[in-house]
Length: 113
Length: 116
Image 1 (tube, chains in turn cyan, red):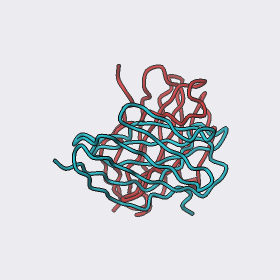
Image 2 (cartoon, chains in turn purple, brown):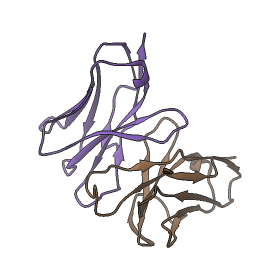
Image 3 (cartoon, chains in turn purple, cyan):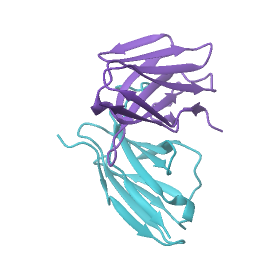
Image 4 (cartoon, helix red, strand yellow):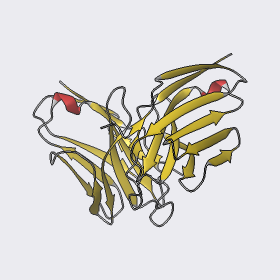
């Protein structure tokens, strides 16, 4: 039962353009959503998060949008840079389960020159 | 300031054997969680330790057990290894009382286990 889904295994974007990574979830109990980035041979690193009471959170080049009615969130990276090339995981948590993240399967982003 | 450190980085075992993986949390962190990441999948939550006790557990059999020591370091033990246990095992730490419901974890590089 995949409660968090990332349907695009890979995405290729030119440097300077916008990257949009999508994520869908099925569990309406999730109240906090996060994006993690993972480089090869490294552990995932936290990128940005959003509470279910918000619909947008911005941090520099990274913006996460949440559409609760559609159970959908997206990560926008503008402008994309070659160093953004990595695997991006969407994750969600339920109230009172601080460390118990439910991850999607990841989207590999490649930013080309 | 050392981040989360895990050992060993790679290991190979045969079916039926037992394995112990180790984790030292980031300085100042007292909560440790373990995740299993199979090839092509996202990390899956195994369990969380805080104050030397298992606080939360994911959908993993009893063959998976853990321990947390007074210095907050942790071990993950897997008994009676199966081929399907081959995966990257990630340790993550966080400070209690901070980011309690935000899911902001610090991950180690992982221990890659191959079961033959």
